[in-house]
Every structure is written in C-alpha cells, then in structure tokens.
Length: 324
Ligand SMILES: Cc1cc2nc3c(=O)[nH]c(=O)nc-3n(C[C@H](O)[C@H](O)[C@H](O)COP(=O)(O)O)c2cc1C
View 1 (cartoon, rainbow, N blue to C red):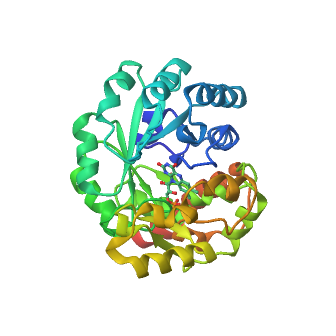
View 2: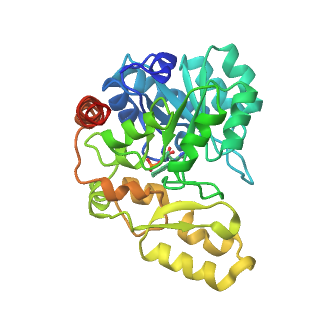
C-alpha cells in the first residue's frame, strides 16, 4: 500500500510502532521494520547518549530497513541529556525521529540539517498545527483511547482524526486504539495516511518484554484501563491493577492537594519491574483501551501481514460492495 507516510519514510506498509518505554528496544524496532513497518527505539529507555548509540548500532545489525528513535520531552527536575541524545541520533545516521511530550522546535534545526524526518506525536489539533508550523514532516495524532499520555482534552479519534484532516497540510497517522485492518481502513477513511500502534505491538512474539505482560494484554478487556495523574495534569492511561487502585484512592482522597511525591511509589521505577521482571502489580504502566481487541500473540510479521491482507479485503470486498 502506498500512502504519503510510506513515501515519506521509505517503508512498505503505513504502520508505525510508537516509542514505548522499556519495550522499544532494538529487537522490537527491528522486527517492525523488517516486517515493512517503521520500528522505533525509545531514546529515554537508554537514557544516555552512549547507551542510545549502542542500541541504535544493535538495531542496525538486525535490519537494513529504515527505523526511528523516539525522543520524549518530559518535565523533569533533572532532565536527561537531550543535547547528547540528539547528537547520538544524528551521528548514528538514523533518518527518522518521533518526538513527543512537548514542542520539539528547539531540536528541529539540528535534525533537519541532518536530513532527518520528524514525526511529532500529539493529542490535539492545535498541537498538530503547531508541529506543522514549526516544520515537522508529519504528525501522529493520538486520540483519547491511547495507551500512555492522552493529554487533557479527551477527544476520541472518531472526531480528532477528521478534525486533523480538515486542518493539516502535512500527512498524519492515526494513533490510539489501532489494532487491526479495521483500524487501518477506518483511519485512512478519516484522512490519515497510516496508523501508529503501541499496545498492540507489545503482544507480539518479538516484543522484548516478560511473557506476563503479553498474557495480561490478551486477558484484558476494553474496560480494564484507568486514567491516573489527572489531578497533576499529566494524565496517563494504564492497565488497572491493585497498585493503580491504590493510586486512584490517594487521588480521590487528596484531591487538588495531590503532589507527585504522594504517588511516587505507584509510578516511579515501575517499567523495569513490569516489562523485564514480569511483576505485573508493581505500579502503573501504560496500556490502551485497544487491549480489548488483543486476542493473540503473533509474530510482528504475522500481525502486519494480517492487517495488510485484511485491509485489502475490507476495501475491495466490504467497502466496494457498498459503492456498487
Ligand atoms: C507501555 C507503553 C509505553 C509507552 N511509552 C511511551 C514513551 O516513552 N514515549 C512516547 O512518546 N509514547 C509512549 N507510549 C505511547 C505509544 O507510543 C503510542 O502513542 C500509544 O501506545 C498509542 O496508543 P495504543 O496503545 O492505543 O496503540 C507508550 C505506550 C505504551 C503502551
């Protein structure tokens, strides 16, 4: 399938794997890129420029297809070495960067000079337009359903995507709630040029996470996510578990007095425990409502091939039937 996104990134299928903390390692990104999508290494999981350089090299050894690096800009008391991470990306020859979390304007000149395509992930039309205005090549439009940080506007993709299509000139992919061929075809119908998937890619053979995480996603339904940290205006959609219930009780109890320190036990340092050790109840970890649409743990190639072949059937049979 050819779309503006496949052309922009030089990939076969319009499917991107969004950056995911402790999931977007070289194995994940290479598997997605080798299957014809765009895999993404998560920069902050590596943390330092040296480690990121090594992870990019590992990925380059596993695939000769294009892949990207995610740079998430978070408010932080001791910020990561962003200048060093950007240098590492530029020097490693990576050609795509997915930015998220904050306006990436400061880093665009250096990335553009290095001929790197930038796709900015954001959760509103106004931030998408800002991304276009500052020179991003594409946007990943992340609806309220998404795993991770859906922002504070709570607009679902059925409205957000056509709104983005009405306003944007640069291409965009639909992110949040994307699982299968139906997601892809619907997103294309609403004006997107592809899809970005997070949660769905975790339940694959190659995802470098503990088996417990994959099985938790297969077991979860669309009712099993919760929004945490809303009082801090840092809303995150996570899979419910006893630690998340505890966190929500504290939020309800403390109301507007809630501070990060009150919930640090439930949100800090959770990812290695969950993703690497499989200790599922360690705290809050991102998960999309799309968990309800995850029934199996295929290989990445099986997943992407299934999406593409079923999309073809939906377009040529089901939809063509309506047009007749
Ligand atoms: C476990 C997990 C970790 C994530 N970590 C990040 C991250 O570090 N940076 C980022 O930009 N997005 C992160 N995301 C968001 C994804 O890149 C993607 O935008 C989101 O998962 C899309 O929604 P979906 O889960 O419904 O597919 C994460 C998502 C998940 C599920």
